[in-house]
Amino acid sequence: MFRFMLASLERYSDSVFRTLCYNHGAELTFTEMAHVNSFLNNNRGSLQKIEPRDSTPVQIQILSSNEGKLDRFLSRFRPFKGFRGFNLNLSCPSKDVIRQGKGAAMVKRATKTAKLVRLIRGHGHPVSVKIRLGLNQYEKDNKLYLNNLGGVDPDFFVVHAKHAGQSSKELEDDSVYPECVDAARGIPVIANGGIDTSEKVQSLMDMGVSGVMMGRPAMGNPAIFDLIKNEMGLNDPPRPVPRAADLGQEYKDLFDSIGGDEKYKFRFLKIVGRKRAIY
Image 1: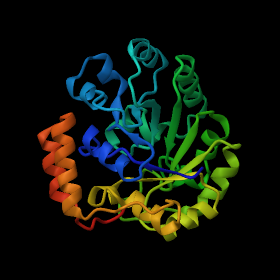
Image 2: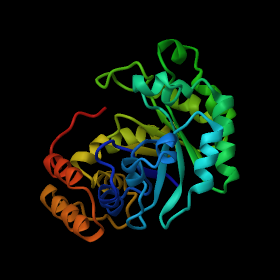
Image 3: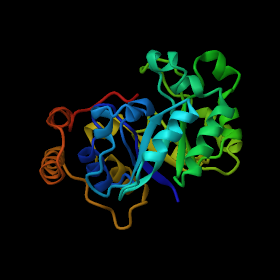
């Protein structure tokens, strides 16, 4: 089954926003990225990111490169209703994260990634891996990302079709997807980056990917998932796609119902309905 997912969005992906997108066609959502170290240090902000408020399907997106620390965190972790596993972030292009040997710096470390995936599985949890096309153009040209796709065994991969050195204005290289699908040995590959039309989704579907992940387009239109599904005939019958004002009100109602952070609410209401550049 072809799947539609909501990407992790820093400063937006709280429970309210995730649930709003889930209500309008996102089948799986992701928390904001957090360092495993921050959980071990009982960092309040990080713990709030994974605080369960409802049963919306969600994976917890984590940064880790250390089996010992990850094992300690997993030993303490207790699943909650709606929890669908962990997402290992090998995609973050932040220079600070990369200096720590995490995020996109891990793309070339397939053996290490495989150990982290086995560790999470050993604790009984589903796990996915999100990657870029390497740390830089050299790693992309040498296709080091294929080592991860060919040597790691998560439940699914998410591939953001840029390397970490590319700017947000540069286009994704969708031509890599057929090779990624082949390298993944039957493990589903989810396409991410620059996806905001039914034509783009159909093109990616034709390349063999098993789903798409959208982030920034959903900031302006959380119903983009159902909008595209309707256009592609994937919703039968078609589902209603609310206007921006109605989505804003729905967010407010959810906020009052399940609670949230006023800063997130302010940011969302400021941007809903606005056309955003697609990164």
